[in-house]
Amino acid sequence: MHVEDLLRLESLGLTLLWGDRPQLTREITGVTATDLEDPGRFLQRGELVLSGLVWWAPADDEAKAERFVAALEEAGAVALLAGEETHGGVPEVLVEACRQHGIAILSVPVHTSFRAVTDTVYLRQWGDLSRRPAAPYALPENVRAELSRLLADGTDPDTLLTRAVAHLGTPPAYVLSATGRTIARTPTAPPLPVRRAAEAVTAATTLSVDPDASAYAQWHLHLPEPVETPPRMLHEIAEVMAQHRRASLRRETTARGRATDLLALIDTPSSAAAPAALGRALEACGLPDQDPYTVITVKGTATDDGTLDALTEALHHLTDCGFAVGRLPTGEPGEATAVIGTRTRTDSGTDTIATTLKNLWPTLQSRNAKVPLHAGISTPATTPQNLKGALTQARYALTAARSRRAPGTEAPTSNLTAIEDLTTLDALLTGIPADVRTAFGIHALGPLADDTNPSHRMLLETLDVFLTYNGSWARTAEALHLHVNTVHYRIQRVEMLTGRDLARLDHKLDLKAALLCR
Image (cartoon, rainbow, N blue to C red; front, side, top):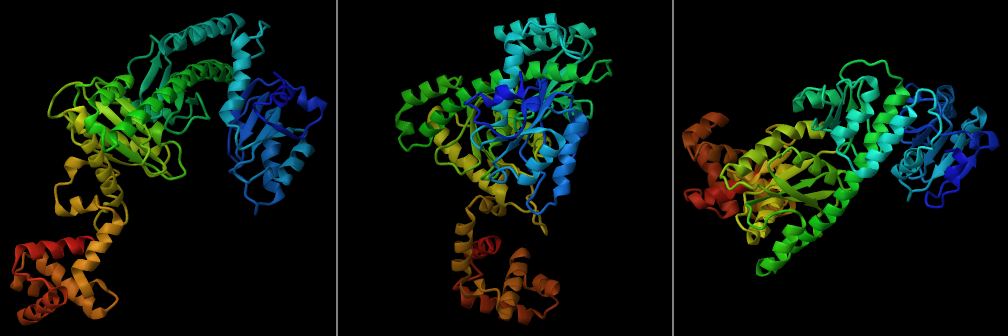
C-alpha cells in the first residue's frame, strides 16, 4: 500500500498538505501512533506516523517542529498524518518542516479516528497478503497466509499467538491486558500471576498490540526471554493480535448497546411492574434472571471516553461472574454502569467482588493517572425487581467515593466505595450531594454557618470539641485550655444561635451532622 492510496479513500477524508510524487508513491510497511516529541527510536523504516500533535503548542518555536520531523526522516518514516482535533488544524510550521525534510504530510479530520487509518493499512496487508515475497524483516509469506486464514476463521487467541511465533521456535510469549490478565500464552509460557503480569505490561520489552485503544483496553505482546527477531517481525505479530482484538471490541460494542437498554429499563419507575421485559433484557445481556445481582457505577472525567473500557477491564477479573457494561441514560458524562450476575447465591458474593476490585483499583488507575476513577458498589439485589434499588445504592456509593477525604488532606480516602463501607454517620453523609450537604449545614447551624465571623469560628470550635468528648464539660475545658464556666457560656451561646438543646441526643446528632457537612 502506498501513501497516495490513503488519499483516494473518501471514507478517511484525508487532505494532502504537502507531498510530491516521490513521497506519495512510497510503500507503507506499518503504522505507529505517537505524541512523543522525539519518536525516532520507536519507529521502523517505511512506517506511517500518526500524531495528534499533543506534543506541540502554539507558543512553541519552529525548532520543536523541526526536531520532530527530523526524527521522522532519520527513522525512514514515509509520511506524517497529523490530527486536526487538538489545534483545530495542522500548524503551518509543521507543514514547512515536512517540506524541508521531504516527508509527505496529510491532515486527519476530527471525524476520522486513528484506528480507522490503522485498520485501513493493516486490513490491506493482512486481508489479501498480496501473495508476494516477504519484505526484509517481515513474517514469511506462508506464515502470513496461515495467520490470515486463522483470523478469518475466528480462531482463539492462544492458537493465534502460538502459530504466530511457531517459526521462531515457539518461545514463551504472552498477550496481556492493561491490568495483567493473560489473554493468550504459548504452550511454553508458564501461567503468569496477575501482579507480575501487570508489571510486565510496562516493561521495555513489551509491545503494545493496539496503540489506538484506550489505556484500559490495551493489549500487550510480551516475550519474557530475548529472541533473535527483527523488530519489524514482532510488530507484525502484534498486529495479528490487534486484528483479533478489534473483532472482540466490535462484539463488546454490540454488547454495550444491549447493556444500555437494560440499564434504561432498570432506571424507569415502572421497571418493577415489568418483570417479563426485565427478564428479556437480562437474557439479551447473557445474565440469568434468577441470579443475585450487584450494580457498580464508575465515573471518570466528563471528557474522557475510556470509562467503559476501564470498567469492562476491571470486571474481567471476576472470573465467576457474568456482567453487562453500558451507559445509564440519566448518568453523567464519563459515567459507566454495570450489572454483575454473581451466579452463586452466597452472602460473601459482594464482599468478594468489592475486595477483588479494591485490590485491582490502584493498577487500573495507574494506566491513566491523569483521570481519577471513582466507583460505587451496591449490596446484592436478590431479584431483578430489586435492581432499581441496587442502582440507587451504587450511585450513592459513587458520590461517597468522590466526596470522602482523608483527615487533613484533599485526597479521597478510597476511589472505590462499597455501600457496606458506609458504616458511620460521616461516611453516610459523604454520599449526599455536596449542594444538599451545604444547604443542611447552613440551615442547621443558623448564624454560626457564617464562619467569617471570628466569634462564630470560636463557638464552632467549642461545639466540635464538646461533641467529640460526648458533652463532657471538664474534658472540653481541658482540651481547649478554658475554665469550665467559659465552656458553659459558649455552649449556651451555641444553643441560643442554633435553637438547639444540647442536652438532647437528637439535637446533638443534628449539630454533629451539620459540622460534618461543612
